[in-house]
Image (cartoon, rainbow, N blue to C red; front, top):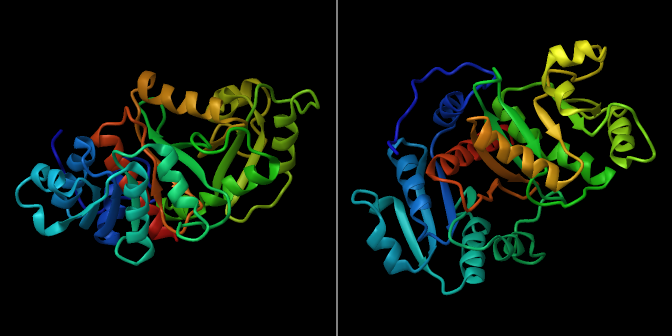
Amino acid sequence: MACHAAPAGGLMPARSFDDLRDIARAHGPVRIAIAGGEDPNVLLAVTCMIEDGFVSHAILTGDAAAIRASAPSGTGRHLDAIDAHSPADCARAAVGAVRSGQADILMKGETDSTSYLRAVVDRDTGLRGSGVLSNVTVAHMPSLPRLIAATDNGILPAPTLEQKRAIILNTAPLFRGLGIDPVHVAAVCATEKASDALPATRDAQALAQESLPGFVVGGPFGYDVAVSPQAARIKALHDRSAAGVADLLLFPTIDAANAVAKSWKFHGQAETGSLVMGARVPVLLNSRSDGPGNRINGLLLAIAALTGA
């Protein structure tokens, strides 16, 4: 995969990952800490970001000798490798680099998700923020003329109403950084009718009646009504908040959100990036199947979140 830098002067609000590159360029280079730096996809992503001027310094934990040996020539002055001998040690060392002010963004490399998240949420040594962590995946695909996001597709199995509220609010710095205001949120359910038999529809109804600063929430909506103005018109729901124009899809379970986000990648020809929100700094939690491009997109989202913080 070739590294590239997009032309300067991107328009706001961001509508593509090329626009995100303009946002990152305007923000200036960041420092990152990576838990498990031996992952070739991570090294390639970091190298590209250094070459494009988006990362000034990276701290990689793991087998320090192997990391240095694998690092491309010319990147040495931008990289530090810290010896860590287990996934948990890698995660703790990377989190420690962020806590000590040596890095602005935390990234998952060759470390399992359990060890990584345990280090992030540790009450004494972690990066706890709002109290609720949530994952958001942002996509740009040929079938939609804007960015669209799905949450929570990586942390909370079956969020409560209170957690859903926090999940929405967690995304505020990201959308501010993307220049999207207000953020149209669609609470996605199996039906547009609120029913006690489907608790998610009652949650959607409650959220749609609340006033969340910076957000316009609508629902319950089927996926079609959330993303398609035509579907919203056909179902006579076009006058409801966020119908057909959703920027953020709020799902009732991690299963639904994860399936939709992956379908965008594998069936929708989507370019995607993912980010964990709710910690003190942006946290990247990549899927093992993600290549360098998805990881670079995640870093671009993280920089946008820093811009909007």
